[in-house]
Every structure is written in structure tokens, then in C-alpha cells.
Length: 333
Image 1 (cartoon, rainbow, N blue to C red):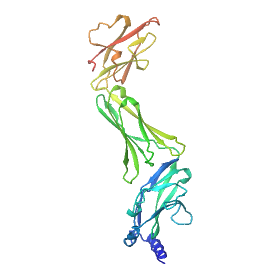
Image 2: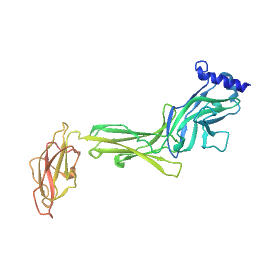
Image 3: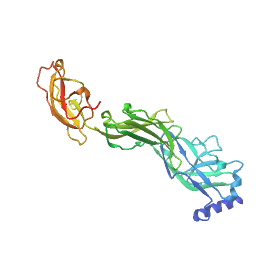
Image 4: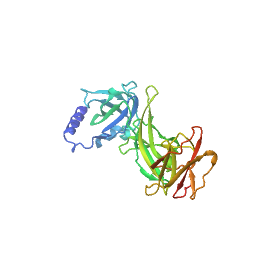
């Protein structure tokens, strides 16, 4: 009779949330989990004052898929049973009204709404559900956008990715690997779910001009493999006070240029104007050419932006040449 009365009261709660505000469960509305991995469901609940004493001895928790009612639903996990459709653990303390749960090895057919049911001296299925969506591949991680920086500035890039299975969090890596050191940290979101964050700090130089990639690799429980996703951001590095860069064939080159190559002059000043005045080519055996102003060769390449082109004097293919240019500003060591 008492159990019948409890179901009657709870049914009335569905119609009048104001009168039954003591019966409640708190969990995220939606969680995405990678197929073949586990999922953490943050969960707490409240019961009426007169039922709190009934949680002192023992209690078990059930996760019901599809509906809160017996009809049209399926109990996929029951903490009081050893064999379940989904294996898992209630990592929270039910006697402290914490129903946080980990469910393992979810596959695509487990996308659905899930309802929590408490079973003690009373039994109650809460009407609030969490929608778990199982996805085949992870989303791209999020990377803070820096855009344009000046050479010598401190740059901080942060990459973050959700960690629905904190037992197997994603591993974040940066490319190029020469940018600097980074550490992966597992953090809490406001609703109790987890994410992994990685912060990369470095002093900007021309070597960092271009694309930077953050990759997130998710280990899987099934098969021992992993799934990965990556995000790319562009970093535009401007020279702080002006410097000269020389390149060959559209990119930076070594000091010696083959006679068949075209010479690519690249330079940038603080106001985005070219800073080179002229360029000349001599044979490598001739050494540095004597010019009126300071001379810098392409072994001192720095960052590059605006470009001009010149072709060095025609010569036999077997001759090697070095390129020298006059700069309006001294090269910064």
C-alpha cells in the first residue's frame, strides 16, 4: 500500500512540479560519447524529507534506456546486479544522493534518453533524462585564435577537447613539435563533465609563421585503437623592427644558390613596407661583396611578408652563387 501511495504521489509530481520540488535529479541534458568508449554521467538527486532516512542503510541505482516507464524502456545497468546489458559503476555515493555513473563500451545503437532510478526502501524513477548521443568520430578540438603577432612577443595558445570518458582522456599534441613544451590537464566543466586542455607558450619568431595544428587522439576501449581529430590555426608573425629575409624559389634557402634558381627577396618593416634596397649576386668563391652599406646574406634569413623578385646573372649551371643585399636597418641578432 505504501509503495502504491508513493507511485501515486510521484505521478502527481509530474503534473505539479511546485508541490513536488523535493523529488529531483540533476544531470547534463546532453552528452556526446565516442563509439567504443565509456561515458561519465554526472548525477545528483534529491528526495523528500521523510524519505531521506531510508537512504541510510543501502541503495542501488538503475539506468533505464528509452522511457522512464516500464513500458517502452529497457534497464541497461543495475548496480545490484553483476550481469548487465552495459557494464559500469556508480562512482558516486547513493547514500549521499550522488548517482554519478560510468558506463562502458557504448556503441552507436545506444544513442537514446537515459533515466535514473533509485531503489532503496522506496523505488523511484526520475522524470528528467540525459540524452546520450554516440558518435563515430570525435569533433575537432577548440584552439584559441591569435592571428597576427609581432616577432618577440609572448604567444599563448590553448587547445581543449571534451573528455566524456575520463578514464581514457584524449591526448593533445601540437604541430610543429618544435614550438615548445605543453602539458595536458584534465579539467571539470560547469555541469560536471570533463575536458582536456593543453597550453602552449613560446616567444614568436619567423619560424612560427604559418599553420599550427592541435590534434586530439581518443583511445578506445574496444579494439585498443584510437580515433583522432585536429584543428588548424594560422599564426601571422610580423617582424618587430624590420629585418631582411632572402629565399629561393618562393621559400627560404641556404646561403648558396644554384645558378639556375631565381632569387626571392622577402622583407617586412614595422609599417609593412619593404626594407631592402638592392641585391647582387657573386660567386661563392669571391666572398662578400664590398658595398657602401651593411651587407647581409641569406644565411641571416628572418621573417618574411612582402616579396620582390630578381634573377641573378645567367651563368653556367655548375657555378654556385651567394646573394647579398643592402638593408635599410641593421639585422637584429
